[in-house]
Length: 450
Image (tube, rainbow, N blue to C red; front, side):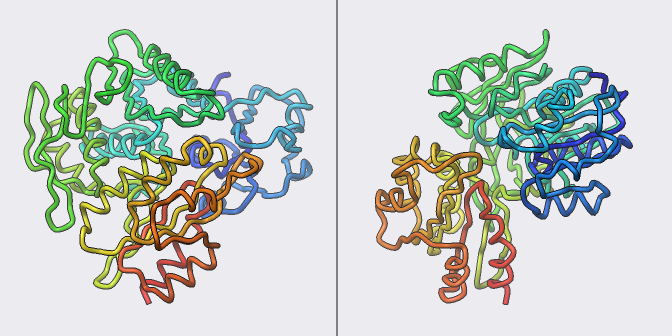
């Protein structure tokens, strides 16, 4: 496929965060872009406002006539998350179109660029967004394909004037094996996506293959303690090639020192909260210093970094209420998030609204979820979000709730979450999960700001 020849693009599953980034990329290039998704969201509505039409009915008659036959000017991109029986997907297959995964297209785009790839079962969205922001804010510049909406730029795709691209490298479905990074970062490799990999050993093997794809002369930056080696190790606080020390909270903001063999940068203010985000910042600083960006510019960029939407995102912060929304959906992500909440607000009652994501993930990590959710003072547990899966007998939110060692806990509907928030007026509220729990953010915000 020759990207330069493409003039029209159709995306099946256009509402996904990664897919919408590609939609915006090709739209920016002047291509005719459209797509299908199952449900309307704020993201698909934003695409429509930008001039990218989206349909929500699985009806082949909604596909533009210009896609009646394959051509070198047409590109069809799909996400593996869409069902095999989807009529629109099969329409393109029956017509003889070659369908490309998002990862394949990213691989082609990045092949001729200096690519910074950020992989990991968690931490990759914030770290890639942070790296892209440092490069932009310092004047170094870059393009970027992000797995979340950058709060600094209010988009998930950035366009730069140079040949550098930052890519969130997704391990799901081994997607990141299409990339050829010049700098590869691995933030974590906890067991996850076992419905795809089968067991943890195959997941680890996939990350090793990703690191093997680094070009000659490139650099591998790997979190210390992972079961594979890189060229540079980093850590939140354990001594490594690069690590943080003197981490402290002042006026509800995180500060730390960056330490490496070459330099110590003292008293760095991080624009977003979280111990795990200090660790992400260590990785981002290490990348920026490899690119010879001035330390003072790195420090300035981190101070004004606002994070990514749904990553430790403050929704309400006033005298009566603090409400934070986060995407955490794995036990270790939850542990990092809730530990940071406890460090920031040790005296406040913590009300956690959690929506489990996938029946298989809930089944595989039931004890880990139960342990971590016990860190809450009050737990409002929503039903499992199925995404691409069918129910599994016995795997329910009630099963998980029974395992949580907490007295103040219950399974609730979205409407009940709103009623409880209205009646109890929680002082410290968090919504956490990767499903459609984000639909509660706006009504909860309105409730708590009244």
